[in-house]
Length: 192
Image 1 (cartoon, rainbow, N blue to C red):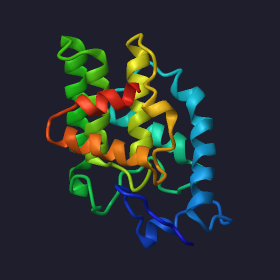
Image 2: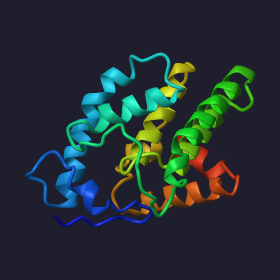
Image 3: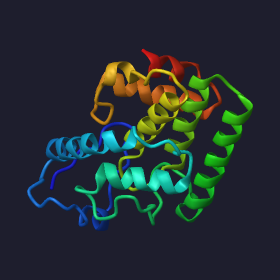
């Protein structure tokens, strides 16, 4: 297998790659296309759900998004990566995130968009799974915002943000600004 990781991606380890379900995939392009088909199958189920701000739902959604791609779909990673919290902290940090988001929703701490974008950012920062964290986090933000009666985010017109591109670079830069507490660019990117 020959996988090339674009800027900001998390390389998979050998044992994670060994859990690839389809045996015909040998390139990053083939993997991306397969994962995209798997994700598309998960969308109708995901947008029917009403209770999404929980660790359990996040794991179920990841499993639905990648269950035909990875044997470990829906299971928290068990190794450290180039980004993300130390792997034994994933469950605790994810629970804290969900509790914080529920509080923000209940108390209208921020605008609806900002709550969803902050949720997205922190979930990416936690990086709970070996792969698919950005796509999962963007979908979680979309689910959260639609449950608040708002339009889905456009994410720069639904670009394939998992591929190397100028748009991906802009997205990574917006995430890095959010790491420093400035959500302005990430909010603009999500709605552009």
